[in-house]
Image 1 (cartoon, rainbow, N blue to C red):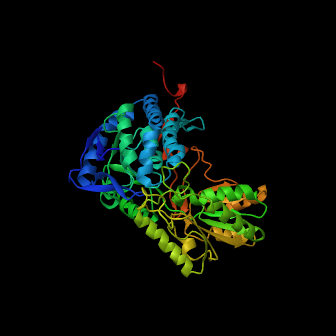
Image 2 (tube, helix red, strand yellow):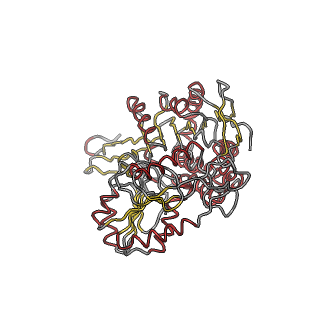
Image 3 (cartoon, rainbow, N blue to C red):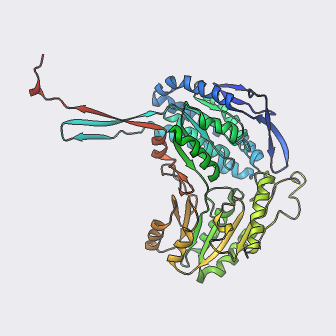
Length: 492
């Protein structure tokens, strides 16, 4: 891996104008692995101007040609799978096996999906009583800003830039300063794929400075952001007076409802995965499990037993299930919430602390935390209301369908949810009443890129994925053509 990460502007790799740098740290070892730019407003302005200059050419490039470039980029990601996965592992502390199996392949899938989508788009057409025809043109916005988080770095970075580029926009993108490596490596692949100069510009830096300058720049027409709700509020306050389009995918505190008639083998196995995948650092994780009372005791016993077999270990070990949290600071946040759970009367059935011994010598300074299961808490206590974003799950009994829905909906968030039942009528009833953008029935994280993705309440504004993404990154224009009549004029 490189010692220095550089900004990517106009297909060139550049140092920040300020010559100021940040450290990129491997959270599993505590070691600095690279330095990255601490970019500011001047760097953002350079990137925006490069994107603005590139927009006429890229937006007028035929969709088939844009598609070929993005498909080539998807192929290059797959060809460099091992190197990208290792970089992601070092940057995030997550298991290498997860990076190889999920994160990097899904990044390639994002480019491939939207590359094909733009060659099969359709236009709306209306026959207005035989008097006129109306049709809709969709045109790219211009220069757009994309700000992505640290938990799924390349996966969510490409989830934003792929539809933006596919629809003919030019992009100024900022990955998280905590996990910058794979975005930097992607920039090199963009050059190899033949992406034109200025179509994609990648800046590294802190959210308040670099990210804030992207949001505020007058030439940027839209902002797509994934991250915390508090940051989303700041972005909305800044962007709204400037009349920018906004797509905000924010936090989650997702309910997992298990009815007594569920397939318990499947429900337990999947619920453990939903709670602890990526160390619980996924906005879609099922961190609040609610179990119908007749099944509660047996479910808790089996859930704890299954979770206790998860291996906390070196991310490079193929047998590791739980790697490092993203930083020591984040581990401290998680630990504070577990302490709060104790204060609120919760019983820690599993975990609740860092590992008693280092996982090995290499990872002696890593930010590891044991998978933690808590019972005995009210659905309205802080631990069940606030996003922890770590390997911590609560399990709570409910008495009937109405109470299950009440518990599911009693947080400010509304991103995703899961329902476990063999009763199809109940599944439809409950799904309709849960306040969430996504409801999985008898499954979790079964994703189809054609479907709308996003949340309600404090979980965000707007939707990503499929047609929703193509609409967000384009502006509709209605064209009305009056139909002429032979009798109204004389043919020459």
